Image 1 (cartoon, helix red, strand yellow):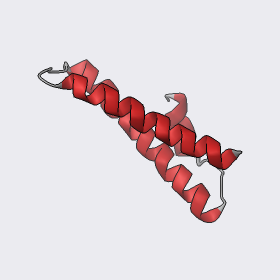
Image 2: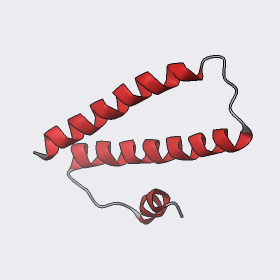
Image 3: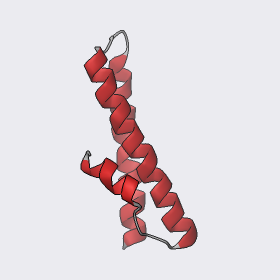
Length: 73
């Protein structure tokens, strides 16, 4: 079940980004908007690294830095 959940989560993210990103065409985001997007992209990258580590090693523990980032600290 967890395998399918991960595949579904990844597919959903890719599909949502594929719908949202083209909407940025000819649009200039403000500084605050860019900051928010960059912060969220950092969370996504860290989460993807965690997923890859869990898949490759079986280690599913989240380090403190990732936990704080995902909590928004």
